[in-house]
Length: 357
Image: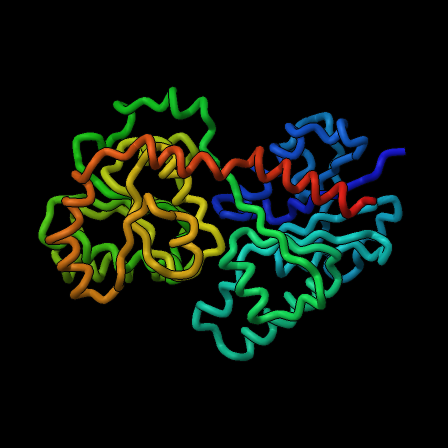
């Protein structure tokens, strides 16, 4: 009789987010690594079961809002993989083992009220207490867990995310289809809110002719206007476009054609867009906050400050030097290649097997 693992893909109900792509890419890679080889039935807990996004050959468990309060019993499930650290969707059966992937403790870095921080930290601690094994997506996140939570002797394993860039797109992206090809531009992508720190980027355009494109879902009301207000005051607004969410193909075109990828985020557990850009061999300019030095590594460039005066001087004196610096495309791609969904899936399968013994 096969063991059953349920992979919690509930957060995929929020497209254009990092958690959506994490669940989709890891889920696909887990199936590609072939659960049949391990005599394990891998099923997916999912809100939109009719889409069959993981294929017709797998079983889906319908996620329902009432499961927050009346949790599913699932008596024949041996292992539940929780993919969101603040999840309210855990199985009720105490015999079901839990593997929790922890992406970040960003709520401690976002300037939330002390009451909200305590609430989220308590929720995270309760989920960790219920877990049999814990995975962090970077060493930075692992250290945060050790600093702020009680693991009660549980070992934390670090399993890096992979790159979302499909290899077939690398070859097929059409340079001419990018409407911005005639402009030299820098590019960034992510959920458009304050923790991504995108409002510091207009300062980098002072003293040069670069354009800036910011893509991603806007989930903090007024933040896009705040960015553009700064841009207008600096006299660079006509060279900035906030696109909103874009398709995967559009993202690939921006990445292939940009002069530089910039990512000044102050709250990241991994920073998937950084690896996406580096998989194209693109130079990346990052903040020094949270996990970004770990993920960008020796092939990244870094902003030592986000002070406006520093950024203006950097834009005038350093930005073009970075863009026209030595071509290290091969080295950058090699660095990015170590972050693979197939590698991540293989490491998760080993952990699954260990928990099912």
